[in-house]
Length: 193
Image 1 (cartoon, rainbow, N blue to C red):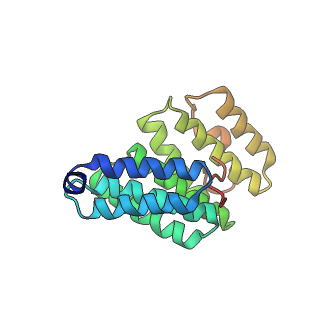
Image 2: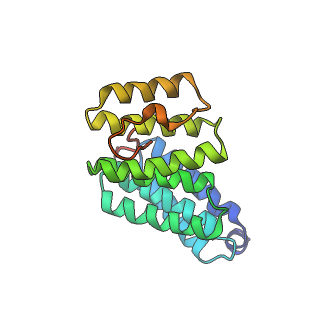
Image 3: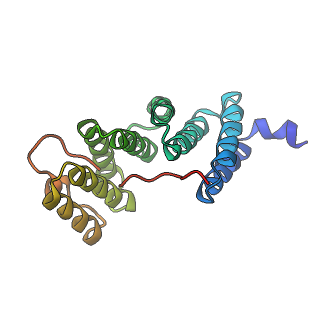
């Protein structure tokens, strides 16, 4: 019965994505990747699948990011972003989260000008869609990480202080140094066990 019903509902694929997140948190990237890939295959065969497919791609990309496989991570995140932009309401939380992930790839590559552009897009969406969410504060932190990497320590500290003090994130101008575009949470990812 399970084999017959699983492909007909997103619950099974979502459960596999959730398992992948837990395996990643436990440091087992092999099982995390396996779970995300199973969810992806299930979502790609289903009519209900695009948003779950994008979530699976973000999970797979997160595993690659955690392993330092930045090109593979970027490919997965970009595919997820394309799907979200096609099927989700414009400026969604999912889109913002995927922009953050892409920003982290570029931050990992030390391509700070590109990273800050993606982080800024994330921040702009979060300030529009959910300005009082923890995601908005994380976006301000990401801006700070880019400024820190640029050696703009006073601006970075201002960002970190704003994110700590003000979860509703009053605006990125506090974190803008006047030297190029602005950006958004520090590099995070799973580590291979």
